[in-house]
Structure formats: structure tokens, C-alpha cells
Length: 305
Image 1: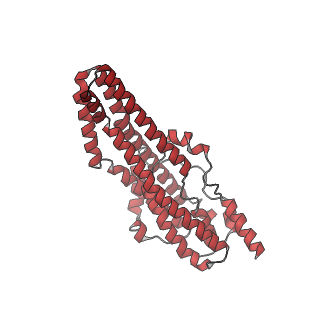
Image 2: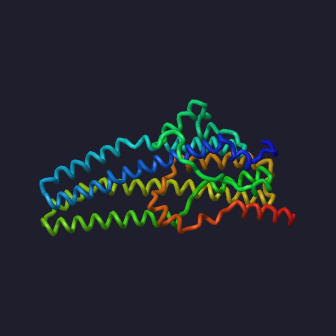
Image 3: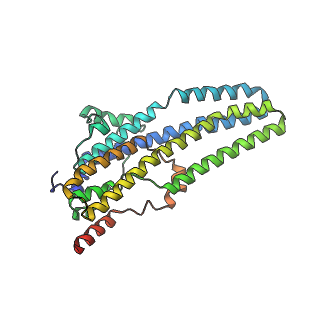
């Protein structure tokens, strides 16, 4: 570790900005994949059920489509999604190691990416090489007023974007919305053609919708466990660091350990749908965490000591 390392300058290099851009582009591509998956698992089954209510002869088509879709989900045909998430996590890990002056962790992130792998990342972005520009640099110039071990922890605190309230509202909306649609369609079918057979085929045709919602809930639940662990570890590390309960020289290894959890979160982090981001996430303040708060806390404690 070199105390002369400048986070503010390191984040402005073309390499750092390119890594942020490609990571954002990969996440954007995953969002498009998730949107296509939602159309295939929710919209299409709903339309087919409506069609079968009108034209009974299409019942077989609706049920067959549902079975094929479930089979595709079981085979993991969205494996490409996981590959892009992993590439985005590795790109951002490379960025953080460079900007925050940390060593690469083979145990957490695998072999360090070589030039060929880094060059291949833009090709995984749906919009082609170059990805999506991320805008401004992530850390303000005030971070330079902190010693590097403390600055590193402060920057890491912004790495995990997690808003539990928004997540709960999003998942509740999914459950209530899809559940309500299923009830309405079953009731409509019963009204048109009373009988358990039609109700059963309607439910069968809607199975992809239920499977998609359950998978989405599992993804967010698993991510919540990692996000909570990262947040707790960072909060504890910062309190101990500012309170001098841990030596500054030990903060480097502690930050590297916390970064392992940050990588694990990014590798499996669910991508927020744009409609949900606008409706739930933008109405909330992310954990009230800002770099200036860490700067103020550090200098206030230093002045007190």
C-alpha cells in the first residue's frame, strides 16, 4: 500500500472510466435479457390464456408453450445472463483494485483478468463495444482529505446499492399483480366454461409466470443476505477504525476481505427493472450514505483526539 496513492486521480484515468462503462453496459444488457424473460414468462402466457378463453381449441397451444418454457428455465437457458453478470463484477473488481489500490483476490474472483479477457468484455454488451457511459466519477475530491485506509473503507461503503424497502415493495407488487391476474383469468374461464378442467389448464398455462416470480424472489432474497453482511462489516469496520479500535495498518487486509463479499454481491446482484427503479428506488434515499459524512466523522474524531 502506498499512502501517496490518489483515489481521485486514479478514478479519472481512461482505463478506470472504460471499466465502469463496460460494467454498466453489461448490466444494461442483463436488464434487457430480464425484460425479454419477463415477456416470455408473463406476457405471452397471459395472452395465450386469454386466447384460449376465447378460442377453446388453442388450449393445447397455451399448455404446450408453458411446458416448453418451464423446461427451458429448468435447463438454465439464461446462462448467458450469469456470464454477463460475472463479467460485469470482474470489470468492476478490476476497477476497484486499481482505483482503491488493492490487490486482486484470486480466492474470491478467480484468476486476475488478462488483456484478452478485458478486451472481450465490450463484445458481451448488447449495444456493441463501448458499453454505456456511466457519467461522472464515483468519488468526490473530498475523499483526498482522508488517509488511504479510511478513504478506501468510505468508498467501499458506496459499492453495494441496496434499499430493503424498495426491494420489499417491488416483490410485493410482483406477487400481488401476478396473483391477481391468475385469479381473474381463472374466474373468467370458469364464467365462460364452468368446470375444473378449464381451470386446471389455465393454471398450467400460467406456470411460467409463477416460476418467474419465484425465481425473482429467490434472487433478491439471496442478494439481501450478502448485502446485509457487507453493510454490517463495513459499518463495524468504520466504527472501529474511527474509534482507533483497529490499527490503520490492519485496515488494508480488512478492506480486501470486505471486497470479497462485495464481489460476491455484484456477481449475483439482481438487476433493477427500469419501471421498478422509477417507482420505488428513486423515491427513497439509499441508506443516507455519502462520502462527505465519512469525511466529517473522521475529522471530527481526529479533532477530538
